[in-house]
Length: 267
View 1 (cartoon, rainbow, N blue to C red):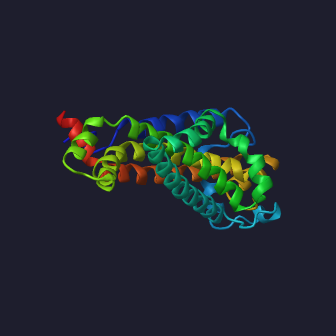
View 2 (view 1 turned 90 degrees about the vertical axis):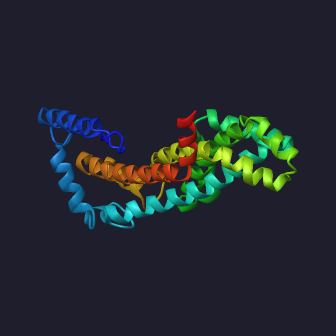
View 3 (view 1 turned 30 degrees about the horizontal axis):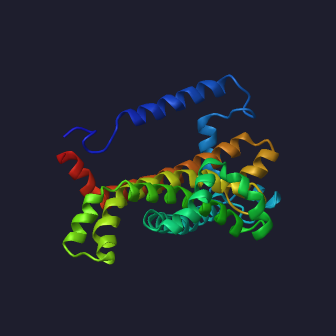
């Protein structure tokens, strides 16, 4: 069995090495305040991971990168779970109930085309600068993505399956349980992974708007101090956490949508 067959792409580490090589070459020709070297950024991330007293001086509640990563991760987890649940449920309902579709579609289609960050000022007014505004913004973004995926997946379902089930005496509950949900799960999980990827960056941006904790707050204070090394260290740690979350989402998709991939291979 090849490495690709095991789910490992050998070009990925080569791409990472190429990126590090280019970064090292660029940092050698620039001042450290503009672009620090990869090794110095790794050392900074390690030094500040558990304790970064300088952050307390700038007003960050938890003076460590670990604590702020936990804060950001908690917000993302809450927002993604709430937003995905609401978006999927409303999207499936809109695909089958014309009134729901007529009421919700204009809102979701507008939200799907306009930059979601424009809602941030209203959320700050309504919820303040704490956790609620950041979670609400990310949850609204995730709900929009999942709504669009759920509504499209359900509407693209071949009617022959529902007609056959009705012919065999299936009721509304069995149609939902045995036809609608299994048919839409693969696309819903794909939308979940896309929404999760965007949620990390949106959460960090929302924390720039006045939060007292989180990686976004750390980036804000470090940018004000022109600390390029600290900014890159924070971004790399956030990227590692986001990649780990994406890997978990990919494993979830492989676990719960394996039957779909197997069917597609047989076809």
